Amino acid sequence: MSVMHGIPMTAAPVLFKAACPECRSRFELAAGALRLAIGGSRRTTFYSFTCPECGSSVRKPAGERIVELLTGGGVSTLRLHSTV
Image (tube, rainbow, N blue to C red; front, top):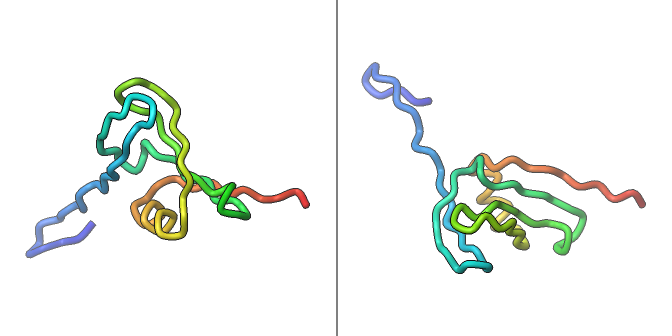
């Protein structure tokens, strides 16, 4: 929270643009609606969400830039560890 001239101000919630490959709907999601999993490789690093239009579970790959944006925007992150 920041303060301007003695008046507390809260930061605007971060919204992320997303699309559903199932119903092709486009929408904005709050950080709480997204989940980020960071694995040991590009194949195991992804973000996921549930489409608000059709209810489908969506999973998409997340490169370095996407990971940076999502973590910076407050998206919950799970770090996956290999068993090797």
